[in-house]
Length: 222
Image (cartoon, rainbow, N blue to C red; front, side):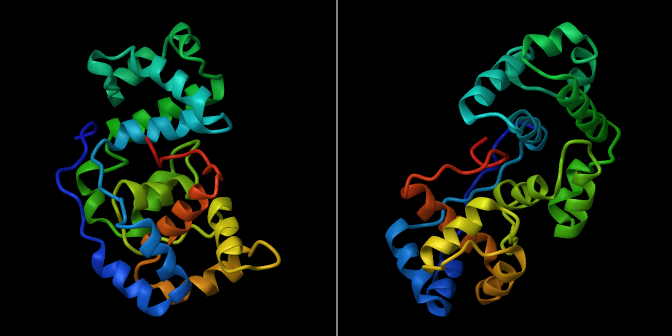
């Protein structure tokens, strides 16, 4: 269950209808962009490995290095046990461009999956806060990555990553603000979008991408 996309795609039409009703400005963006493309994933471990690779690297460089990493595994499918085995050899880590720090992060992630500290089969039933707490216990995974996991992998409907630069800049652009909103101001603005702040955020990002702005690296797009 670490590898495969989940079957089916959520119907976000109810969320879109609600957001159009409460926020006409965002509503116009929703109409222009079309249906929300968020769909659940089941390849939890692989996606979090990629999130670690993406840290502090350009998207293109990270993609090349991550592909080298995947090529070390049968069917290009990293598993916790194999990561623990292969990355214990420094040559394997160097082969895919991993620094000592990122190697440490991946080994810690693999250990958390292998011994059940990240309870793979229970994640879908855990609360947002419980999932975040479980993930940020891993070296190299912070709250932002955990929030991206909730949104793009588990498809939780009401996650609002107020520290995300792309979201802040997108809101500034869409609502014609003079300055980029801080976390507190953004949180207050986002109250209007409950209980579908995940979907609202997705539309803000899509609008931002259309305008030629690149998202921060992380779980999205894995």
